[in-house]
Image (cartoon, rainbow over the protein chains, first blue to last red):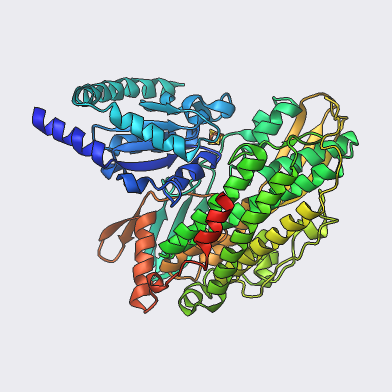
Length: 170
Length: 419
Ligand code: SF4
């Protein structure tokens, strides 16, 4: 099992697949993220591939403050991803709710809904920053971390459910 | 998920997705391969902005207004600023007006290039997608040079603009525009002469002149149906009354028409920017605007890349607006969408939706349920796109066959501009 985990972690470091979700952004960060896929920045050249299905993805790139409408979707996508999974909150409003904080149908940052691993502030973030964030995430991804991560994911999911119940009551 | 009639199939599409931009959902009813009914659901990105605007001061709202949309942020802030300037009775300096026009046209360039890329991607022409987005970087470089930010430029302020354009900037911009002009002329040639592309785009997402009027289409969608609706011309704002603007129209009324309109508009934008840089009046860039806006109401219109953008501002005389209403152009174009989709083939749905350049984003899985034998298939946006590409390839239209040679001396020019 140890070797298997190690292998997974090693493999992920080489070629992480990412999925992008707009949880209620202004599009600014989204187009900057898409920019990082196109010729000038081209993250594919370092093995990072964007993928449409959460089941195949290792990293969830999430932009925007979470709106009430997208909240369930976001949780659904996160739950569909296979562990170990990582979340990068891209943009100030993904980190804290930013300028939309306090709006009547905005929950706040991504971390109000799902656990976040890397916070990337900026309004809008630059494609270079997106690449740097992925790089930082991968380099902190050693084998112990993977193990811990899988555990904490589970714990977070549990606490999330209780959160959900709470908000449902509201 | 079946309808009463035996061979009808219902496909829910969306709402989420990772592709581009915002989420929206579609429920398509099919009869064979034809779409007979389309129901459109939007509002996933509703953040309650208008309410939020009512609790912030006019100055704070400037930043909020820009973040309505990251793609056409400048047009929103121009509409907002000019409404308030008018309410306060402030005439902003001519130089500021010219700078607003320059940024607005740069924004149009980047938005249309973005659209060109997305549309090309939807029909499976990824080479053009990459080319368009690469060229878009040049525009973003210019915007970053002039405004300090690539997205949400923050150049407008109440009473004028915050940054000036000096001769050096103007010189640099003109150099980049030359390269861009070559590239875009090339895309125009492609859209007018390439038979595969024309066959793929013609007669898709039809919206004729009368329907466009009926559904209140705006922007390139209306202009592609032969309606010369362009706020820059019919109600000139900023410096558009002094700058020569040619309204581009086309009578195809389909996706091909919209492509041609947008590509030609890019060339037009370049010539507007050149004109503005050459005729930039000297003087101040900022006028003083009082903190409190006199009571009253104002409607202000601008021409966003996607069409007519309307802002309504109601002030009660304090430093906080009483009500702000924003009618973004995509909102007007959604109404015709149902009409465009009905009667078209399933394979044409992605490009028909993309062609109005909506602020949507949906790739979620959609379930394809065949009511005859209960067989169901899972579709997501990507799957539908692939289906669409394959469908057309089977009918002899292979977009991927189109070769784009590197435009002549592109690299050379690029290097020169970088020096
Ligand atoms: S951080 Fe700023 S640019 Fe990014 S999505 Fe939020 S408001 Fe838009």
